[in-house]
Amino acid sequence: MDLLYFARIRETIGCSSEKYNLPASVTTVGELMECLREKGTNYAAAFGDESLIRVAVNQTYVNFDHAISDGDEVAFFPPMTGG
Image (cartoon, rainbow, N blue to C red; front, side, top):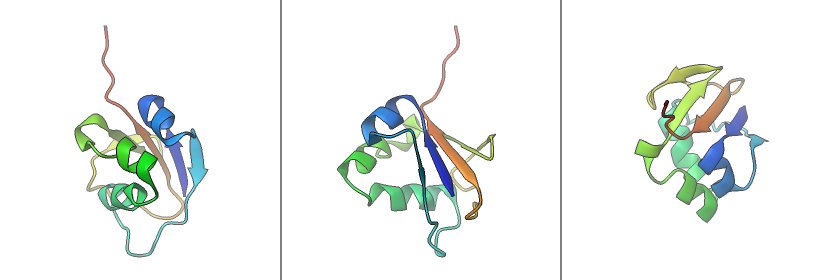
């Protein structure tokens, strides 16, 4: 699985992307975020407030209950505002 991080999330984690071996027990975006929080304090800080996170799976915006699989690309970014 390819994970992509943007803006504040990228800065907090300290990288813009990584390969991730999805555990068999993880089937949704929300469960993935729970696993990522356990990777360290920087991940816990980046994913601590779900109201500040938006997600795209394979370049389509999704909710946290969206199903994922090991071959997916998952992008995390903060909410965007226009102007």
